[in-house]
Length: 103
Image (cartoon, rainbow, N blue to C red; front, side):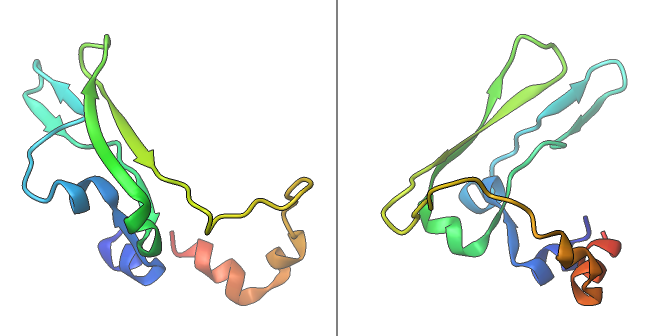
């Protein structure tokens, strides 16, 4: 996803916000001599105060690492009773549909 699309949607890479200068990778191929951070969490900026930690941790897999995100849920989040259901009428809304065609 392009950086301007992330900004347009108000999303941030939470690991990069918390660890702006740290070099860490979630994928490494020694044979190809490639390292990259292909796994990440994107959050809306309004949730930044609720993030406690974002870390990259070792796994058993030799070429991949896990990402860990700790979020503090406070009283500002209230769950309503019942089950969430997607409003499929939104699919007929042109402006709503355009948000996803650019991705």
